[in-house]
Image (tube, rainbow, N blue to C red):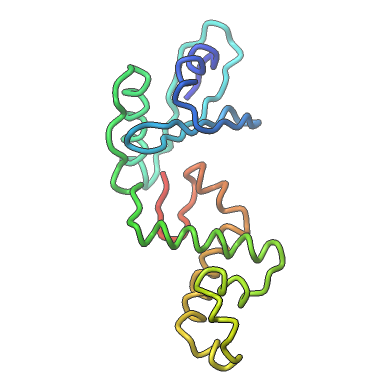
Length: 173
């Protein structure tokens, strides 16, 4: 979205959960009854410029348009409506995302794989022998989630928040 930034920001302040001023614009996460709404406001320095919506035309166009419609309703003072189904996570997907973020953070700080797994699946993992650990379903689950966590370790969380990448079990728009 493009505009003077000032008027729209004052209208969105009551809904803002998070804000980041980046070189490409103002990134906002807005709170709504139906879930978070993420937008980027590119500030146009021309004083009388009208607002413009920029929507990327790709494989996620229907989801992006649904999000623009939600944002339009929010600006009009209405309830934004439900999240598009492509942005809703099942309880299992939410838990997997949390596990992957924990693994990514643990690996980033140098914690051993088995110690991270014990934090996620329980301390009993530390009591297993090396062979028992390698033969366990926890080992397989951990390394499956570690593969997904590589996405986050390589900065994928930024692209995910910007709606440019698919990460783990979620297709973000």
